[in-house]
Length: 154
Image (tube, rainbow, N blue to C red):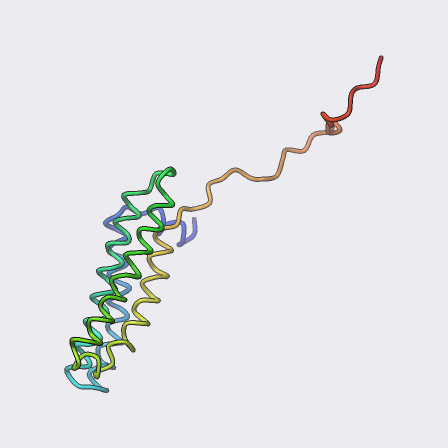
């Protein structure tokens, strides 16, 4: 069994831990970069971007988990996508118009990579594995029967 299949078959708490670990690993890189480029406000911008993307990813995973049955799967995907996009976009607009210090510290420069990494991680954790039967028909020695042509008289 490959890693991707194992990730998708994990329970909800395990998938949350994986998502959190991935965001934390990105934060280990982003926060020192923010600190070096814009001081404490840069670190705060990186931390805020990571926190917003983690929160939106957790909510998207929760929506997808609640809609894991085949009849609701499309709603889970669409709902998760909406939440995952809406929260970071709203945060970006809010920071741009209301938090000049975070905006000047490069909040958007941290939001985009966090968003993309959370998007990929959450997608891998959400999509089901391919469990459909093979599309190949079983091979038989008999010739295929064409139902559109009548049988010849005996």
